[in-house]
Amino acid sequence: MTSSVSLDQAAAALRQLAELVYQGESYSGIYEEICRIALQVVPGCDHACITTISAGRSPRLEATTDEVAALIDRTEWEVREGPCVDAILTDRFDCDSDITKDPTWPRLAERVLALTPVRGMVGYRITAGPQKVGALNLFSDSPDALSMEGAEVGAILASFASVAITAAREKSGAENLLAGLINNREIGKAIGVLMVTEGITDDEAFERLRTASNHLNVRLAEIARRVVADTDPGAPDLV
Image (cartoon, rainbow, N blue to C red; front, side, top):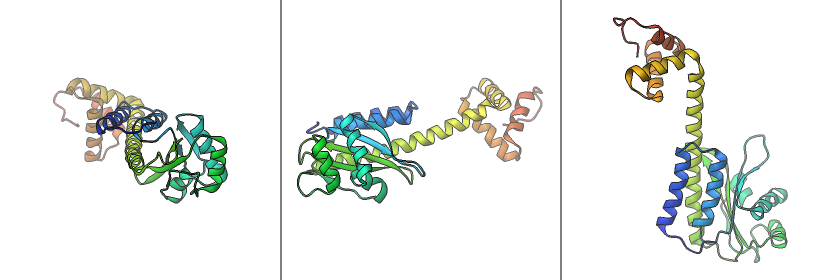
């Protein structure tokens, strides 16, 4: 449990998360890092987990710091109440720092108190752009340890998590598209030709092909074929 954390420590932890996105880390790696960081930077947090949900599928536990958090997550969906359920299904935000007294989620609290050391809990939505994709859930073993300060730090982490997941999705989508195009034999060759002759990156080469395709109203694959076949120094530049 972290009783206090400096801004420098929090910033360093978030930079680590940003680096994972930059390096192309998988969603699972990002989710795991978010949970790990929560223990470092959120005052009062002893356990953390992230659950996602998508249309037509059951909630999925993506990452957890330990079995305690995993057990509570499963219990929330069994009793259909709790911080994760509220964050994902109703958009509500609730922080119950002491579930031993008039708990916000009585059915959940009864089982949590009987089965775990947890005494406080809070949940936050995680979004990817406009789409709600899941929730970050934080738990404390000490009553009232999840103070307003801790709740605010958790909200910052959840917001950063949303940005990280959005960035990861967009990066993955762009990279998958580019990879698919490069796998096209002619497009791959054309990109290679432009990289060598123009001294540019694969991203820049692809952008030149795409721009030429749009400008000339010719299919991208045909533009690529012309670039590869064009060995006449006097021929006009296509890209």
